[in-house]
Image (cartoon, rainbow, N blue to C red):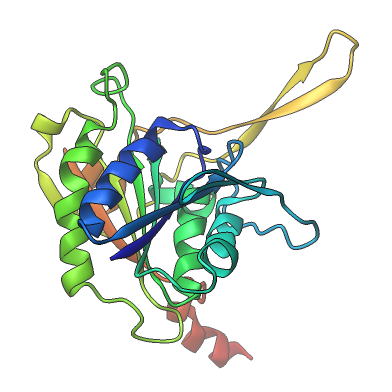
Length: 260
């Protein structure tokens, strides 16, 4: 199996090293793992692509490249330059430092890379490690992802739904904020909503008096509804959420048709 991996935390992120280990084992002895990751952190880049400016790309080692672009840019660079148009069997994005569940899905560069892979007809999976007081201080905060990613990925590759229609399925895995020995299993769940949480801005002033705004998020440990991602993660389960790039509110179509 030939696998392309990327992330949004950057080429030197520890989560990318965890993903390289996972991908190498998944690819097998005769497989290949290609890495194209952002040269610098691109968290919250969502599905951004550098359409109006070029990006520099550098080979750091065999099959390992850094690009001055977004995670989605890195997927495009991998598919159409680095891998010379010989598309991989699988795109993996992550392992993100922090969860990409609930509303975070809409902002996540990790998700954006997997979405770009799916739009190009490649089976794609985003992997994210939920952080919390029970795992953030561990020597390896990614141990839950390391322990549980491989069997889930193997099941998805073997039996998952993928390019079944115009907008194919890609998957978001979120590993719970606990040590590996406390993970209770995996659940197929929907994207949740932490209704009281949104992004905002916090003003700060430089020594010269200029005003700068820092974007801030809300608390991450508010549970979502039963049967959804954060609910499963906080209960000790890996959440597995099938997603599509189709943003149509299909449930509203009939009503809108009736008022036009």
